[in-house]
Image (tube, rainbow, N blue to C red; front, top):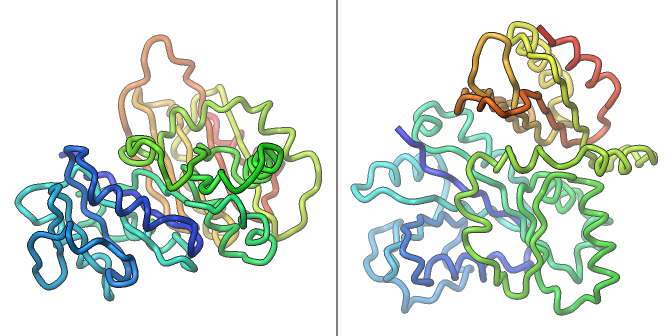
Length: 320
């Protein structure tokens, strides 16, 4: 049974999340999305778009629905899953100050939800004019950037090209894998943020490692977020990998925001896709490796205080 893709939308207050949500709820894109928001009222969703109302779920005239979370996210998602007409995707908006981790973890933690829905991508909307100030004064802003699979660098009309390029370099230093999209009023095609398939891992992880390494030679201060990228050409013994990664996540999980990878296991011809949010992890076999594929395992950690050398040695010791 295919699982419904879930997009987690995060971003600082005023960055433009509402604009993006309103587009999904009003454009005639021919797909049915469910949009879960924290506070329906403050979002300024246009009442003319709303058709039918039951106490929590508002039907839109383009077939999408919008509902509010007051309390339990798992209850809302389970309810959405039981609706007759399924959804092409679910989008969950987190409040401006919130850490997206607990929302993403819901899909690993609750078996019923995990069977029917899966995290597709974390999308972070940032305001090009204020991001640097936010990164300097707010730990949450840094975590939202570190957490992202896609970063919407919004309001680019307010910033010149040299500053945009500097911003993108700074974002890359924190999160080498996010896809950065420039936008005004969140004017990106919706399929560049929705339905990207399991963090679009294949594409993300094929980023050239040389491009990454330049970020990691200069020493960053301790609370800075960074990415560590590992690759291994020998097949991996899952009986070595699992205890190793469990130990890393148990001992350092508070500092590891995200970990994601595609592994070539010694006794399985399918790709093993691994991802974690802090301590909580999930691994699934996906499609078989093709004849032409380089069966190379790749694993990425994004977090603080990462010991790249120790992680590399540990990963290499998982070879079959």
